[in-house]
Image (cartoon, helix red, strand yellow):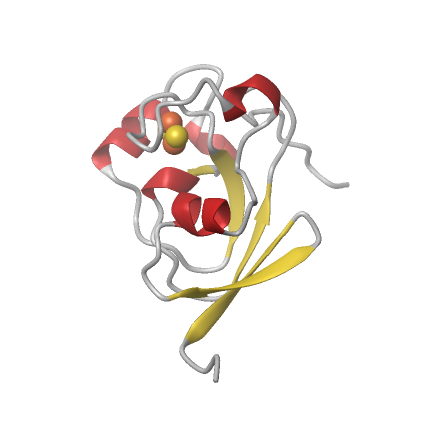
Length: 112
Ligand code: FES
């Protein structure tokens, strides 16, 4: 029944979403938010400008949009961290999503 659905793992939950779903919307529709603390309220609602929906994505999503590249290139983000803005990503495969700490989710923890 869920053949054409893709799996997203986030916060030890697994949800099923349609291919090409917007990652931020898909999480929100399942009561999962790509935000920490106050950024749940203080965010740009998906325009790619605030940078607070940054997450680590394992799996395939659409290439970075122009605004996403721009936002991930100034502090506290750094494109080298490899994070993605959930509001700018379309889901293209099963995914595992990790949210790091900090208002923007910028505190990437590198496992050793
Ligand atoms: S919600 Fe603001 S950049 Fe994604």
